[in-house]
Length: 369
Image 1: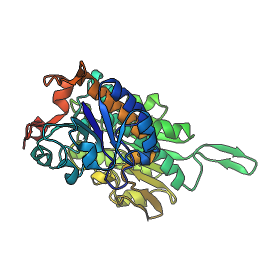
Image 2: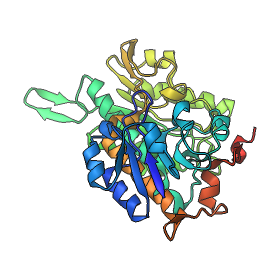
Image 3: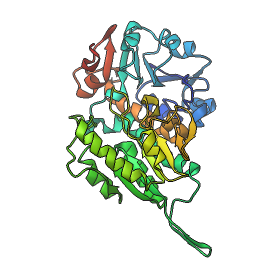
């Protein structure tokens, strides 16, 4: 079995789909692993480290993909690389499945999008969205601290007392909870909000204050994701957000709705009401942004507030993000290997959930249209 690991082509993408450690695990499963030269450079993994782990180093994508049975990638490969993958081969990655799935189908490959993994216990070790979101939440707070002109913790000094920063986390999913934990470790006073009632207990368990209208309904889907609120609750949520932001130094925005544009949580009037020198980090900037003033790939200033819109936040902590992602992929592939050969159980819940393209057709129910 030949497995290929591509060098990522996307702008600002420093992650890689396999590390030298995961190459050893893949080889133990029976794979002959080929890594495109330079694939691990952004994550501090040299070609020599892959070779020492047992991988073959290919000089370019065509050589890496030649006769590959399985192809691992972080983001969806470019069209030129898709054309090099043999029909019938398996592609696994974060493939942005709702964007032109027909492009993948027309290539004749079988494609698994890790974004569609079912939220079940057995799939937790494969859950790349969670592993990457957790690191994004951590990095968001670190970036906020770097932009903030003050210290985060309470400090008692001979020159006087420094008050702790007040951090408001908007969206208490995986990224939000990690942001809360990180801000607390840095000594900030933290509050958070979410449209899912169950998030309140999780927020409080981390030592933060949960902010929500008293009449809040549970806006959670069966898959555990958030859904949009009704008009009246949106208005009440906006009022509470505006009030909270007036006494907030750092806002971390993490709210996403799968398959849709990111909800707007902070508008220009809310930004205008924040204390001068405040910071907003918008993790949803690539999906339209939770803040109306954020700009993808830029740090902008408006009304005395710095608004951070870095693209691809997990890539800003690429070494750990790559290690976590590579483990997710190994855990996803392991059940598919039987006696040294690929043997996919198409009825398996995890397989069926992540499968988006097979035999030249888009097969996932969510992509039927």
